[in-house]
Image 1 (cartoon, rainbow, N blue to C red):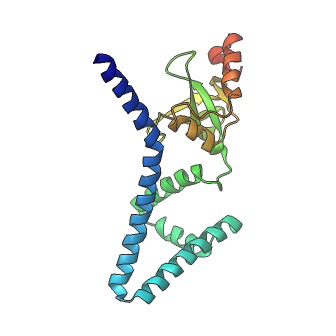
Image 2 (tube, rainbow, N blue to C red):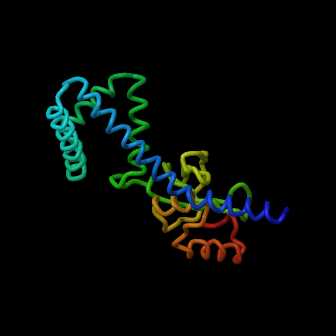
Image 3 (cartoon, one colour):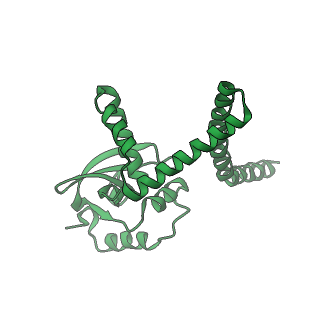
Length: 209
């Protein structure tokens, strides 16, 4: 009986882990569906006309897609630029907008700064490595955001000298997938081999010296 209970719990946990990715995808789809449905209902409630609602919905989609195209091509759009100028005149709002924009640019393909860099640091002690996003750099000092598994939006920010980190060849998508999957999704296994070589060489936290 005890073995049956243990086996049942084991299979239950395996089943939970198996359906988690599907649940996440469903939640994202439900979230998008809710936004689109609420927008459609709002327009229909305002116009009380199906044709006008579909037209407004279509025009909104085209306008957003066109904005994305213009931003991709020229990295600046006159209308958005004017809105930014207006927002930057409002004390509290401009702070929220500036931080939000930097976070979006950090994860977006348009950002070409040091924020694209991924590094490994020794934490919480020597010999234990964690990946981190370099979000800023001043001289030889790096500002690194260290995410936690399986939720990369939760973590902490540290300031570390560049000699204390090991640069990674992974991009943001790869390291995020590695963190969310708690290490299961690791296509660039040479990253771990690099850290193992450093440990064998006895370099430890003197990685870049």
